Amino acid sequence: MLIDTHAHVNFRAYKDDAKEVLQRSLDAGVWVVNVGSQIDTSRQAAELAGQFEQGVYAVIGLHPEHTHSQYVDEEETHFKTREEDFKEAFYSELASHPKVVGIGECGLDYYRLPEDKTQHDQIKEKQIEVFKKQIRFAKAHDKALVVHSRPEKGSDELYHDMLQVFEEEKVEGMRVVVHSYTHEPQFLEKFLEYGAYVSFNGIITFDKTGNMKKLVEMCPLDRMLLETDCPYLTPVPNRGKRNEPMFVKFVAEKVAEIKSLPVKEIEDATFNNAKNLFKF
Image (cartoon, rainbow, N blue to C red; front, top):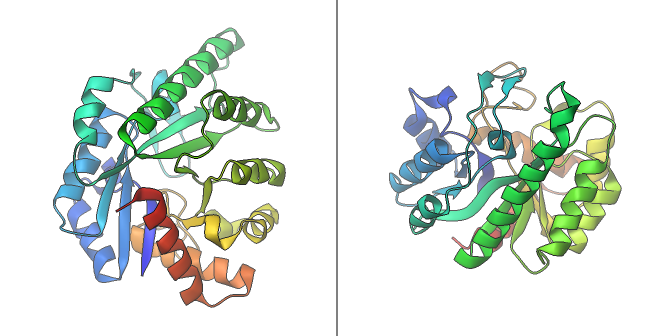
């Protein structure tokens, strides 16, 4: 059994066939955790999860991109974010849904800061404030915490800020996953010291730097999760196509290759890790 622990079938890329995509994944033996990024996508994640008796779950929360308005233009998508606050009353009601298993994706994103550098400190401070709110919310509601982290190119500042938040908010002992981690090994070690899980996606199938291979080798199997982050980051051999949760099998196969282990061992270990994290 496999599980895609970080999907976005609740996003616009699947507006015409979300339920079919999820059913296709379940038929292929792949469970799915859909992750919200703000109010609308969080609600949609919960609603989709409720349409399936088993195997589809939801994470709800506010992505750092949505703490300020900005234009996002990347390989797979382009859109303008709508600035939101973390509305605790709304998320409290949604957290009572039986298929909601986590809070997020929340965290810090310094990758898309505006050209006007006078705004940078204010934006970073707000991201940190909203991140702390969601950590406390996850504790209060006994939910897993799904953490997003994307630094400025050539800078470690985000990870120093994030570890300071972990320390101030006493994250150690919580159920936490740092999703799509791609940065330096030294910070991977720090997250593992906090007891966090770390999830890997299709990037490991097309990375040419050698860094992802090193991170997969470093991460103990009992702290590892698999994800697609679909519709983004489609793994080899399906580059150029819309990503889907069922493609997480290619991530599992690459991990097995890197760690010189049977694919079945990777599947079983990461599925059990997800059960321990999300308590489904």
